[in-house]
Length: 453
Image (cartoon, rainbow, N blue to C red):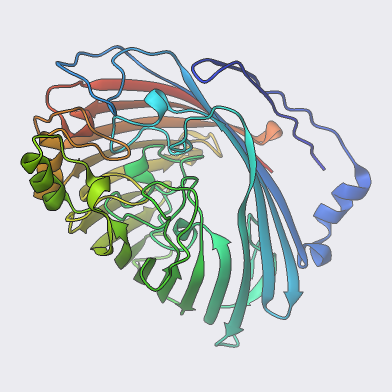
């Protein structure tokens, strides 16, 4: 069995040095457990560690506000370390528990860009590593067919023969993105594209606490080439809050998704996912905030008119085309944009597309290269709020000369198989950060180190 030792020494909130040391040792008894397929059917043990130093070059800005990306700053480093444990409970049932350590900070404390360039960065100010429970949920599956397929051991997945068609019920603590809006090429910021609006549907304000997790119930009906999913989940008490709201009659999130697969031949496959969401929370309203600000001759404050009666409705379309040596993806998402962003990021409309190729084409098994574009926008009420000097929890320059936020991202993943390590240089070019034509463009560079076992 391999053992990973990671030491991250944080000097302060603005500067951080880290030592990323991988020690590989052999433990024959433990290794035998991993190799024994009969034991793997009852246990699943994995870990991951990801370190991302990121820097943006200096850029021009006519003005800046409280939530603006700083025009000049040093390198920021994020760090996550997750331990995945799965255990079979009884027939077709399992429990999954994930402990996670996270630390570091994003550029400008993860503010100033709606499609933020590091999906591993949380919107918190502390750089100190924190240990917390990321996931703890039970999964029960009910077979609906006699035909079975072999599912290999993986993160939060037991090695087993599983019915091709089944009904699954999952309850506990998890990330909603674990089960909805999946995409083979644009979903995991630890191995794929890093930008927030590429790892998920940008306009889906999916319920989660500051670190991206929530409590809830997910039901999935899976057939051979289609699936239906639905979820009821908790939302935070406050926008971008860590504590989840217990007033579930007036504060909750819901999402439904339909998936359809089309097999063009033995290799080519198209998958389309259509999702709709409805969230309720004690939100503020953009139009009311602007009106109240004008009456009082003050900048609007979205937090001053929060009420439990507010909601947010929207949808997303997610498609991918798999072909030999890679694939393409497309996403479009929209929400009504009347009430404040509550959990994910301040995007009300988003379109993204990209291409991902694996290293088989150039004889580098395990490598990958990806290039993508995303265009983000906001509703008229949201725009007017920012134009009048309002602030959200992630963007706000004090005023606004509106333009679509455009992001181009390019990365290469270099796989070092012997060390279970993926090294990924990443470059992003961001036009009109936070929808402001008076700021930018911004160029970011990063080197992602991802260890997985």
